[in-house]
Amino acid sequence: MIEMKDVKKTYPNGVSALNGVDISIDAGEFVYLVGQSGAGKSTFIKLIFREEIASSGSIKVDNFDLLKMKWKEVPLLRRDIGVVYQDFKLLPKMTVYENVAFALEVVEETPRNIRKRVMEVLDQVGLKNKARFIPDELSGGEQQRVSIARAIANYPKLLIADEPTGNLDPDTSWEIMKLLEEINAAGTTIIMATHSKEIVNTIKRRVIAIEGGLIVRDQHRGDYGYET
Amino acid sequence: MTNIEVIMAMKLRTVKRHFREGLKNSWRNSWMTIASVGAVTTTLILVATFLALMMNLNHVASNLEEDVEVKVLVDLTATEEETIELGENLAEIDNVESVVFSSRDEELQALVSSMGDIWGAYEDDNPLNDAFIVRATDPHDTIEIAEEIADFNQVERVNYGQDVVQNLFRFNQYARNIGLVLILALVFTAIFLISNTIKITIMARRKEIEIMKLVGATNWFIRWPFFVEGLLLGVLGSILPIALLISGYYFLDQNIESVNQFSFIEILPFNPFVWQLSFLVLAIGACIGVWGSVMSVRKFLKV
Ligand SMILES: Nc1ncnc2c1ncn2[C@@H]1O[C@H](COP(=O)(O)OP(=O)(O)O)[C@@H](O)[C@H]1O
Ligand SMILES: [Mg+2]
View (cartoon, each protein chain N blue to C red):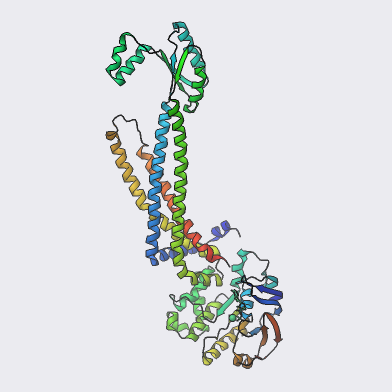
C-alpha cells in the first residue's frame, strides 16, 4: 500500500523534517506512528496524501508514484485516502449531514447515492440522529466522529489520522479507537500518529517510532516505548 | 485529461451546483459584491466614454480625410491649350479619383460667397489662378499625389492643407494609442480591485477550499463557483454603464443637429453603434469579473 525509499523532506525554511525514511506498509495494516513533538510524524503523514512533496527519495501509495505524478492526478490520489485531524476540520456553518455530503459532492456522486451513503456512514459512527446539528452543538468526540464519517464516505483504501484523540478525554478516545478498529477490520489500512501511551500499549499494533526525522524502531505488536 | 475534456465531462448537476454556490457566495458576501460591482461600474463608465469618444473621433477624422483634396493652381501665364493638357495629365496619375476644373472666376465667386464682399473689389481685376481640384482614390495617398503634381509644367503651386492632413493622421494615431493604453490601465486596475476584494472573502472560505482539496476536489471544481461569481459581478457592473451609454448617446444623437448648424460634425448613428458598444462593454465587464475572481483563488489552489 505504501512504499517509501530514502525519503527526505526539507522545508523551504531549511528545516529537515525527514532525513531518509524507508518503510513499507501493507494493505490492511494498522500502524501507530509515535515520537516526540517535532520528530516528523505530521510531515510523514502529509507526504502520503501529497499535502507536502518529498525533497528526494521515492514514495508509492496505492498505484501512484508521488514524486512523478502529475498535478492533475493528485485529486485522484486523495479520493483513495481519508484524512482525520486532531482539530476535526469541520465547516462550522454546515450541518453534520452537509459536512459529510460535501466530500461526496466534490467527487460528483449522484444526489441519490450521496443521501444513501451519508446516512450509512453517520449510522456507522453512531450519529444518525444528529445529522441536522451543526458542529458547535456537538461534543469533541462527536465532532471527531463526523470527521471520520467524512473521511470514510468515499470508501478510501487508506485512512490516515494525525493525533485523532489529541483533543479528547480518555473515555472519548477509547470510543474513537473502537471506531477506527472497526474500520480497519473492514479492510481499510490505517496509519495513526499518536502521543497516547495508553492506547498504543493497550491495543497492540505495529509501531513505527520516528526521532529526528528517522525511523528508529519498527515493531509488530509494539509498545509506546517512551515515558510520558 | 485536458481542461476542455474536464469541462465537457462536467455533469449538468455539477454545473447547477457551481451556479448555486457562486450565487450563494455573492449573496452571502453582499458588501463585497457591492464593492466589486462598484469597481466594475466605475471602470466601465470610463471605458465606455472613452470608446464612444474614440470611435466617434475616428469617424469624424475619416470623414475629414475623405474631404481632403489637392488644389492645383495653374500658372497665370498658361495658355488655354496648356491648361487643358495639364488637366488631362492630372487625370492620368495613378490613384486619382477625380479632377475638376475651376476657373479663376469661379474661384473668386467661391471666395466672395464664403468670405464676404471685400473680395468683390477684385471682380474687375481678378488676381486668382485657374485651378484643378484633384481627389485621391484613397485619402492617404493625397500627400504623395500632391508632391508629384508640384513638378508638373504650368503648375504654380499645389495646395492640399499639408499640415492639416499630416496632423490629422498623426492625431488619430496618437488618440488611438493613448486611448488604448488608458483603457488597458483602467481594466487592469479594476481586475486588481476585484481580485483583492474577493481575496478578503476567500480568507473566510479558505478552510472550505482546504477541505475540498483534502477530499479530492479538482482545481476546476473549486474554481467554477468563483468563475460564476466573477461573471455575475461583471454583468451586474455593466448594467449602469450600458444604461448611461444608451441614454447619453440617445440624447447626443437627438441634440447634435441643433448645436452644430453647419453639421460638419457627424456622429456615428445610434443604431447599430450603441448596441455594438453596449455588447462590447458587457463583454469587457464579464472578462474583468471572471479574471479578477479566478485570479484571486489561484493562490489557494496550489498544493
Ligand atoms: N510547514 C513547515 N515549514 C517549516 N517547517 C516545518 C513545517 N512543518 C513542520 N516543520 C518542522 O519540521 C519538523 C517536524 O515537524 P512535524 O512533522 O510537524 O513533527 P511532529 O508532527 O512529529 O510533531 C519540526 O522541526 C517542525 O518545526
Ligand atoms: Mg504533528
